[in-house]
Image 1: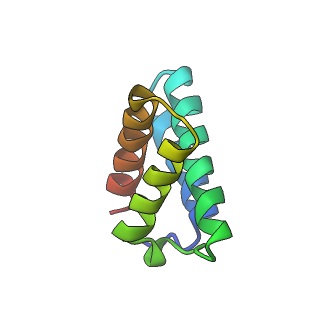
Image 2: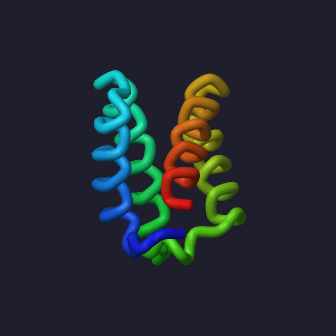
Image 3: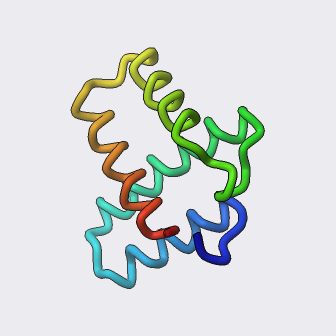
Length: 90
């Protein structure tokens, strides 16, 4: 991953990247909210650095969404947001 160290810094840079790619404002807002939700979840687990995020913690986040009653369609969109975010970080 690049020189971004905290998840919050990564989110700021990611939204800037989406804007530079001329993504729709609704997309930027939705992706930003999805990543912020992930960051909040990970922070509660003591994970604040991009380098410490791992597959099990992401699976735990997905399971938490299911437990909270999110629809499959909503979870799918959130996963797409996460994939785009982690591709950006890589």
